[in-house]
Length: 193
Length: 90
Image 1: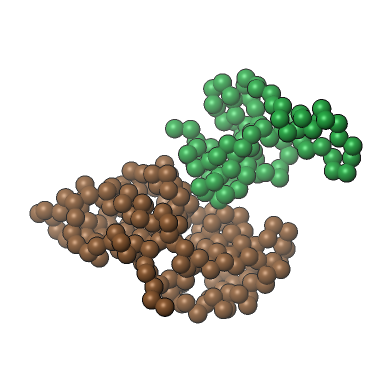
Image 2: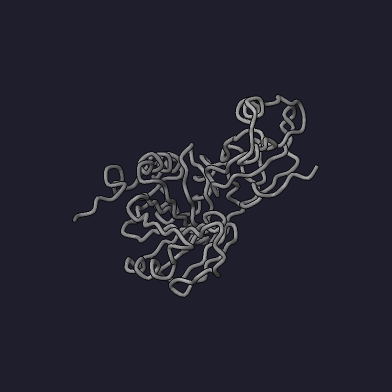
């Protein structure tokens, strides 16, 4: 089965916005991330089992926290609720085996999210334009759930030199979020790849 | 902009929350005789207080948890927030 990416209809490569006379390194870089494993892990309210580790990462029930290694990032989504994002597609089998259905709800969301990665020194300015969260407080390896121009999204701060953020939205809202983000990026100029 | 301190996530904009009604309404006891009057009061009748008031809110665009918020309905000042299972101290 061939996969159609969530942003296939809107994401085109090129340079856009206020790019004239600017060094390429100073432009924002926007790309779509595809083929990631995305799994929601929810521990049931009455479950008392100790939290399992996956891909040698221990789940952490702490706001904003992201635990990570080279392939996998586990984002705190809410109390006893995590979003696992990984390059390792075969991790799902391992997760399903470790997290028993009596204590955890494990849902594969790989095909139900659009993912935009945006990098550059003005990333936080772009995010501030549509989101009420104070992005000055968001540090490297933090994540938040919030809204961007009314669209619910998750932001995962991958790096801070320069800022690099991965944005997740429901697949059906992906194109709208993409338009919002690219519109907000025009004033800084961006390279789409 | 109005800010609400989510007991799970911290200080967030009110835009991320959805109002969920009076937090002081108690459901009648299960398996007990409930009069129509009591049931009406539980389902429909609400006070419209001016001043401090405990309300339910859901952090719908954040952690998706229900929380209790003590808000002044006249000034919109927020005094306190609690997790949904925490009891309101009188």
